[in-house]
Length: 506
Image (tube, rainbow, N blue to C red; front, side, top):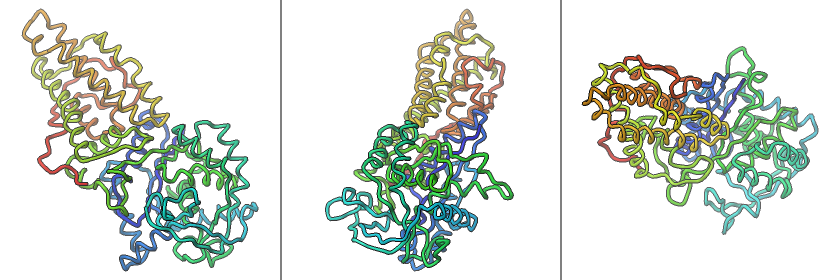
């Protein structure tokens, strides 16, 4: 079965921050998990390099939009590598192959009668590259996201007949109640549709930085039309000489932030319908990571630098923190203090120290060999159906809930070792059989949670599994008691060492 997951493509008008890392990490968790299940996975991320936000940012720096795109696209590639992300392709909307597909699809929309010439007037936010309705504006005609005052603008250009797709979109939502998740975002998108759709401009006359309109090369295609088509165009050229659209389209899930819901949950499916292309299976919406009152934004100057966090603490710590700290789908606060707390109490102590103690006891009491013993009945019951529950949570894009399920078992293992006290059992030869059972149970529990943690913290999970002598990360083996004793344990070192440095700077 094919599984195609995408992130939004990120504007190159600024360097990447933790908000960008968040979506990319989430997509990588899903991609890695599906590979554990043996699925045929394609994972796409990349950069959005056309339009007014990029043009204006380049002008401020005294360079061309192309130069800015080259510079910051490189930084987004570096971020993916730093985060240990396994994307199959990195698309740039300046790729000539992308432009060819955009022109082809937009021409098809035009040929199908869904485009006309007109004049648009509205409140335009250059940073969103979007016209705002009166109901979306905040006091003083300001953008609710970027907090800048907007001006009323008008322009002659080409329009997409979005309003004519209202009935088809309502039918889509009625037929597929999980098309947008979570439920509150589904309700929001459906409410927007039922509130009455308005046609919108498909092109821009005053801009030159973009893909030319095929039938009117004096204008360029609106940046959002261009950008949305990346999910479809990438499959046409990601692998030289191979068209992957038959294999992976429609997309299984588009992961996006809630601020671009309208484009992905309303405009995008309408565009695909207009071009006679199948709509994606699901759009998954996450909330904002907040520092103070606002989401992290380079333009607002409130960011946590992901490169610095990775440099100090490693990619796994950051990957764990953003999924663990904020319930996926909701807004939530992040902070340097919160990061430090999670790192010390959960990663270093609950997981890292448990692993170190278990391996040390196996080495000391059983000469480094995991004992052959039956699974502890109570612990086996606590682990029952864990892999199936994690699978269900991730199928529903409940990443934080899936991680919570795994972490509950880590806490259970810590409780188990404190109750059983293997260091006391080792002093009584009559309790040797029970010591074997306890040490096997600890090794086996650590193996199972590490297999399930692999999508979240791949490097740490692989290190621990290697130290346990059991490196298989397939989901089929994530069952307590599935692997017998007999493995020779190795050196682990500290999974999450104490960091003598400042906390990640806000």
